[in-house]
Image 1 (cartoon, helix red, strand yellow):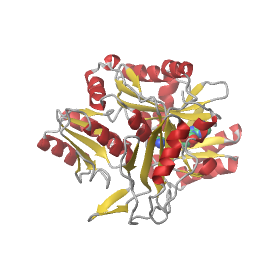
Image 2 (image 1 turned 135 degrees about the vertical axis):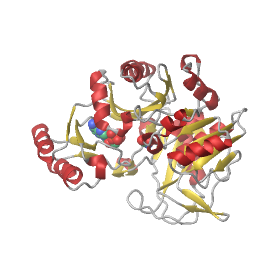
Image 3 (image 1 turned 135 degrees about the horizontal axis):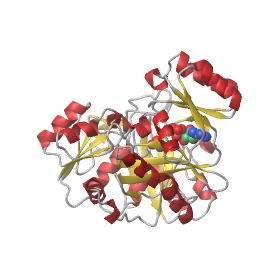
Image 4 (image 1 turned 120 degrees about the vertical axis):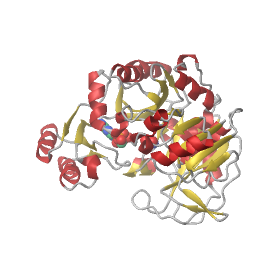
Length: 426
Ligand code: AMP
Ligand code: GLY
């Protein structure tokens, strides 16, 4: 079989690498891919962008299955276009992807189907939004309605900060169309968890739990990023909490989408806040796998990913079982100088360790320049390792990244800190 993975980040490198290991897979094309997918055995990059060229390529090459990594192509309707052309593709339709592409849609959906989330209101006029903020006080969270590449959420510590965020979005149009409507939300305290499932429209198969580290610097300080590292499992998710998340959030979401006439097929990511009493609430839905959560999750996945996806497309996920490595996995992101605001590109990368059974470097912002590997984006690499405990996975990952060098490289030295505080992995 020939497959196609759409995207070019660390998530897509991990997905394509895993898919290529399926005994029935001959080749996995990655569009556009990166410096890592360019050299990985069984993978080949194709420099394609836009829905039309992707459909044309899949037809021409006889691609039997396409898997979509990022939200952009989903929002552009790539799944609808492939299906219309009679091509197999795994991901939600453009309508179903609204769970991520419109926060207002997601909040109304959660209210309608009684899925626990923060209280909210949405606004298009700055004066009304500010009045709401003054009424409720800080801390409070201001979110752009649309996709804003991680820049759309402001957790405001003061009313003034919230008002400034509202003005930036609604009056100054700093986020363009994405910020023409804002959702203002109650601030939730607790510990964040990424809970990702595969859905076939009716059933949901949970993947291993994980935890992201969104802030740039150690101790969760500095600006928000796409994610500076992740580990799996998330020990806070006990078997009881796992069952509760499925019962209160995931299954009602899958059933709710079906009931609303937009069945959800694809990876579904629930970003959750677990409060002190252990109650889960939904911060957001993403219509895709997380990046960097995918890297440690994929390291732990022992089942054939292609088979799982085939079950999801056939509507038989209730018959599928995902087997996980009992070891923990942890990935540390190495980011470029200037990330997240203004990452520098073109710095030569040296000292990459050879892949091992328990450690791999997934590429994101890299590209080949002749034979040399250079940086090509904000998050450059994700060094991901397995270990008998989170602590051991963490030392293995940090040991493996030791020889890696590029000018301006920045990374966090405390990935896994929350999991470690909780002790043994769940
Ligand atoms: P989102 O894109 O909605 O997940 O927001 C990005 C990040 O902002 C989340 O990962 C949280 O760290 C934080 N966040 C979002 N909503 C809230 C909330 N209601 N309360 C506290 N923190 C939040
Ligand atoms: N790491 C967070 C995300 O993929 O949205």
